[in-house]
Image (tube, rainbow, N blue to C red; front, side):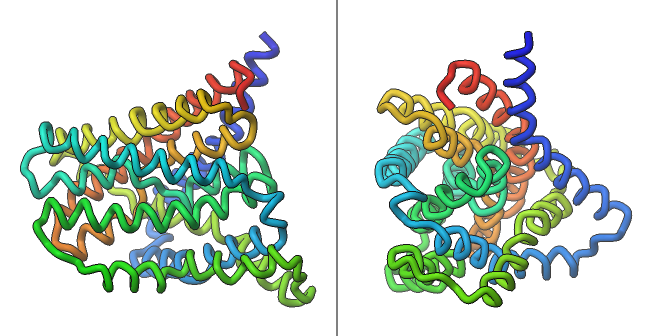
Length: 316
């Protein structure tokens, strides 16, 4: 009984704080304390400054050889690509209309790595987990951005061009933050105390502010429409992708923190950035918003269950 309670406590220590901050964001939005202006400004602040700073501090302060496993990153990239191809193949048979296929596929494979994924890893493994997950986030983010453009372009019959894709990746603040941190990590360069403390202040506000804005931006009323396609994407995001990726990792011998990070990243909800991309490309933005709302709520439950199963099996 005590072992079960310990497993249960660990599981909810990972997802519980996320639930509290998302719920607080919803509550503050309904009471009027968080306005549309605050949410828009806060979200931009997180994406352009706070989250890149968090990734920079996490990577720069740790040797690459100690912070991330090349095998874990390679597997994450390969599994993400393989799952994307499977989802693309399946979507052509079950998703109607055709123009919604890219929205469903992206909603199923593209995780909210930078906000909820990192928060899961930080809650589960502390600074070590955050450092190990940071480089993983950066490299997988590049891949999912490319795949997101491809799947939406295919379903909408729009050509984006390789130059635009490369430009979008090169100007992504998260990727810039990671690239700037790599020399500091590789060469073991230490920042001056003033710069490090200032950067840490900015980094520390990232996850709380991001989660508050995420919760405040959720609109569950929109779930009344597009339910079939929303459910298909949620099924892929909450069950198919995390289960397949985690089972594959376990079969290849990943254990402990590495397996935990892979599972937590895969089981995080659909990325809010996906909505921005869908809207910019003229896709079904309502469907994209529905997928984000449903998977954000469902991820708290499925991630808790996944952590409990892996913990009880002694795998993490």
